[in-house]
Image (cartoon, rainbow, N blue to C red):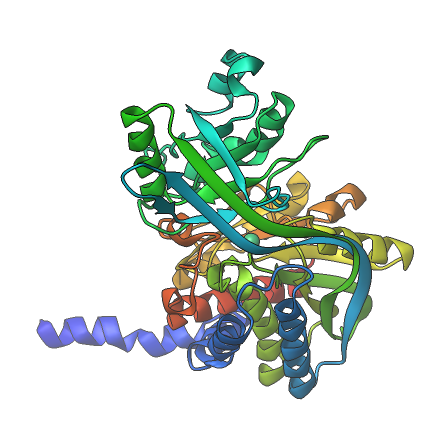
Length: 452
Ligand SMILES: [Zn+2]
């Protein structure tokens, strides 16, 4: 019986291999290739090691683009160029936040939010009003707030399973808090870092000012607890904030664009991209060096396997997702001005952990067509293809009817490290990165082969 069992089970294997569809065969070759290639991983190592803190306008941001440009040139893509645009920028040179205490000052680990103004003179010294979010601040009168530092201390909601939702549960106080506090006459703002981790790393991010700008910074979650306890012990105690930052009114910056020409419809572009910029306090490994090196890897895979793409496949390293989104807007303007047809755009900017799925922002019929590819990608970790958002950089293309997609990975560790010094190369697992490159390449192969 035993030998008959083996004959039935294993005897059927050659037949199964023989009966693979052409798509299954190509996708198998893509993953065979990518799981043995360390090119993307080594590119990410370079970006994290030599160009950390590559915020828009920084020297590091230009070095990162130059490095990736030479990589594309070596690869022998058909076209590679820097797409130039003008934009305002901002730079942070220093952040220091200290609790002034008779028993000895306590330094809080802090990073300015972008684009915070500098503190005046030798620094801002003021009493602190703690609130648990925007709604509580609105219940206070301006006399209580005037001249004070408002401290937003709402933690993220850890009961939410997807950590992007945890982030979403507290991001309003970082994004809208400084503007509201400024309107009510506050002198400065401190925000509890928007993260799932209880640690000593400040997690920065952008804030949206309206008319009046006031100095603002994120402090680590451990330090937020220290500050809250200090206020409970002495409600009159003061905090000193020192921020040295500058607005750059207009700079020249770039997106990096690399193409491999399509054999049948060269004027139709399938875009795959990530953003090259990262916060000044972070190596930007998962956010979003990885999206850039994986997008570059898609072109490498197509070239190494000699896949005959019908449409032009375009990898873009977008500049400035984090602060003003100037790169994404500039690419959309560029394609509109030049009449370029973006057939579809796919962004990888949700971390580089184990693959989970794709989201699609397109018409029902296009969604159905893309979702039909799910079973082919299932063996490689894609559990879902569902409707949802895409990416900040490709978002503006939606106004012009371009079908958009986002690549999604397991989110559990992402918000532990997001926008902090902890988003470093050692947090990236090479196989998870490689599987991500494979998923992007396989999805683009399927879209190019079968159309929308
Ligand atoms: Zn990002």
